[in-house]
Image 1 (cartoon, helix red, strand yellow):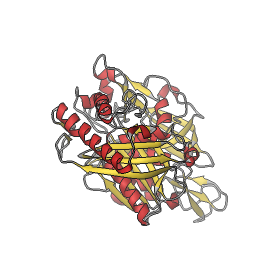
Image 2 (image 1 turned 180 degrees about the vertical axis):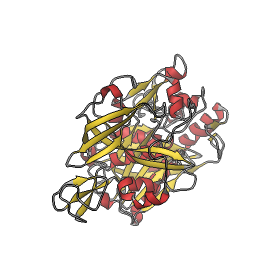
Image 3 (image 1 turned 90 degrees about the horizontal axis):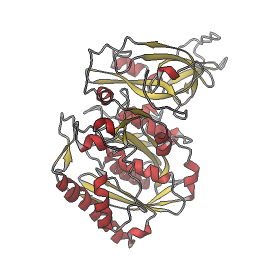
Image 4 (image 1 turned 30 degrees about the vertical axis):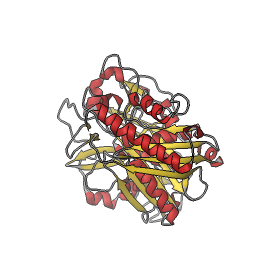
Amino acid sequence: MAGITSYGAYVPLWRLSRDAIMKGLRGEKAIRYFDEDSTTMAVAAALDCLKGQDRDAIDGLFYATTTAPYKEKQIATTIAAAADLRQDIITADFSNSLRAGTAALRAALDAVKAGSAKQVLVVASDCRMGAPGTDFEQNGGDGAAAVLVGDSAIAVNVEESHAISRELHDIWRSEGDTYIRAWEDRFAYTTGYRDTVAEAVTSLLQKTNLTPGDFAKIILAPPNPKIMGDLSKKLGIDPKIQVQDTLFDVMGNTGTAFPLMLLVATLEEAKAGDRLLLTSYGNGADVFMLTVTDQIDKIRDRAGIKGNLEKKRIVDDYRTYLQWRELLVFEAQPTPPGGHISATALWRDRSQIFPLHGLKCKSCNSVHFPPQRVCPKCRSKDQFDEVRLSDKKGKIFTFTADYICSRKEAPRVTAVIDFEGGGRMVTIMTDRVLDEIAVEMPVEMSFRKLVTQDGFHNYFWKSMPLRSQSYTKGGDK
């Protein structure tokens, strides 16, 4: 038996008002900050999923996206390193399809059932871009989800599944394309999405001798909200009662991550005994029949979808959004910290860069970062244990603001923080508003992108105000 034993999600703090895109549009969509991408969002979702889990017990990590920062380099290894997983695990990337997330889920379930792994972490994230003025721009959002698949303490049993492969050009991106391309709407949304998902669902219902009324929630992840009523009618279900809210008005369609993010939203409200139907689409369809167990209440302590959606900041300036997407450049970009990248140095210092390991002195128990052979407190040499700081909260000891930087970041805030349990670190702050920063402000760590140089992406940890704090509308002042 294999099933879902934990879940997690990440929705960026920042939301773009759709009225800023086109006057009169309602709602908002989640948008990544300028230092985020599909990799950093995946790390955030993975860490949310791993709360309370034994990281040494994870045997594999499967990652799904259509917006990987590299064409040839595995991203699952980056996520595994940042999550501080063992090195002797299975890693794989799934890409080129919006169905990649559920494809990775199927592969993880098969691996656990076959006995080649006991626990596999499945992570999906995306930050696709629609051309300005299109429905894709209006409806698309950024985000990530993660589920842990295992063979014990199962919170969600996967009872049955069905898949359909369908070759057609409805939605695609070619090599070098910045924006999503699509064929005529009626073809893409009816012959493509509606008919394919309906056929897959019908086939699974026939296989299990069930009807749509036997499911507490049905998870549909349509390309836009307009098609929901048409598909619901075709399946004979009530979209207001049975269908999971697609969150279009508050988040948007998050691409590969969308089905799994909606699954997480469903599990946050689900109770033991609920039967769920999970669907995804992309050159075919995947359908899963799920049953919630009494273990579900033991994994509620997650930020998940609900916690991330509650804490937000609204961006009303469309130009800010374009600048964060690097579609609008105001000036020549100065080289930021971390701008000079060395693959050799990244390898040498990998334990302090990706999982953010510091050292704890065996003689005096003091923690220090960056790691060094001699304890700065008691002067003991080579007497230490590595400790992970990425999941530690801290407080600001002091900070400074620098306006001599790129306009999309200005001001760059550098903060010296003290970690709970010991350790001090100089950090760049992200997701912050200058007027709200103060000494003793609680912070947490977030894996972010420092710079991209000659196609080389440099990541490191930044500090940010706790997402659990109250936020007000607005940006930097």
